[in-house]
Image (cartoon, rainbow, N blue to C red; front, side):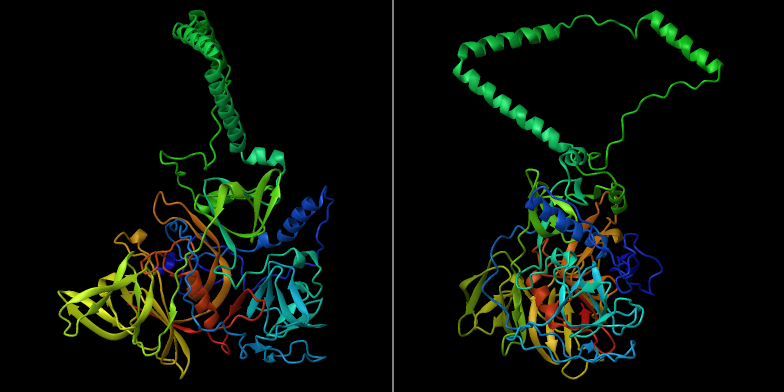
Length: 636
């Protein structure tokens, strides 16, 4: 796709583009309006369960106002991965970095100058000494972190609702924030209208559950299995469920009918004579139905027809319009489907049309939501999403993420090989390399070091591994680094992405340290379906632990897609990013809409290794001239 088609991340403007994709949310993450100082509305509850459910929904309602970012646009992504295996034992020793010491931070705040410039941040505590000091909790969807005690378009990052960060607990009065500014120990300032040191505050206590950075994915993700599933703004009542989910009543009727049929079958089995009588009665009824009684021909009665015609003529002579013909009400989009069960010509904007005070929107089959909490209500199980909405879990299921992952660059290896075939073997040559034999089996996505030596035997290329056996070239791929970026500083980190080999390598100076498979943009001769990953040298502009990506289909009949809280996102060029993909496990193949897909484990590895570093408790961080993002070189 051309660049003008690519959707934008939230609040990002690209001067190279003359217009948006049409599905970009307009909320600006880098220049948010501070939330007013309002209290949380209260309300009685019948039980502690109800109180808890309503409480966290009310607090999370703030999160529902957050913008949804658009990601790599195009046709809907593939369905969720069906891989259920646990991650393999192979792990990388590439360390997850501590917060960067060179991130901009403010020094001891002056008493008289509220606009003091930031200075170097204190060194964060060692990993084995967890922070136990005061914390600042966000009470808004995104509490902006500014470089100085002034609201501006420049932001260092943000803290998500309920997120907590190390802070100097004494607010600094001055500037345009009436409640004063809090100085974060890892750099930057937060207005007191957006955060509090009172961790018992409901917006903090009942905010979004912090991402689990020790697991494969930061959240659990649910796949929507049917068209029209509602996302409620709060916990629905029984009447609301009946109104917005009419299929529930039809399901009850169907179950009752099935129970009745089972009872009748049992009755017929135990009472043969009654069954025979019932069959006879049924046959008699069928015969009667075949010869129906005559029906009064009201419409065919000549007198009635003549009378109706006279009435219409009389109305016309008096200038009275005939009564309108009653039409059947239009079906909602999720019931107006083709023969394959696909809704007709649906867009993201159409989904928003269903919004009212009870339902925020309805989902297309294939949408994903990130699950914050699971709870029971009115005899059903529900998901509270990280956007603060409520989804019925009986219309969804929790996915299992793909387990593949890359490896640290082996000592002495010239490159790293990956197996892409579903089944492959290790090979061994004799001393004269005239015959080859199988020396073992290999799983898909197996990774290993290569020496750089290759040998062709009977038109088949083999590559020697650092372990001594040989890989058949046709069974997989291997890393092949491009030239270093021209402005690379000595020892600086950079990322090499090879679109032909479908590989990524993390490098420090001239030393490769980590290698992984990727899925770049899917190519097509049809321009509307062509989603290439653009080549060039870029720097990571911003990073988010998770952010939502959505978009409309690019050709007629394509359905929109929405993936809530795509994990470990590093934007490097407009809306194009390195990010984790949990909805497929086909790495090493073209799969994306232009972004660089990595397995969740590899995306997390690259996310925490690359710059700008993510400070403790932050959900997103932006690069600055003083804290530049890691270079990304993408080539064929």
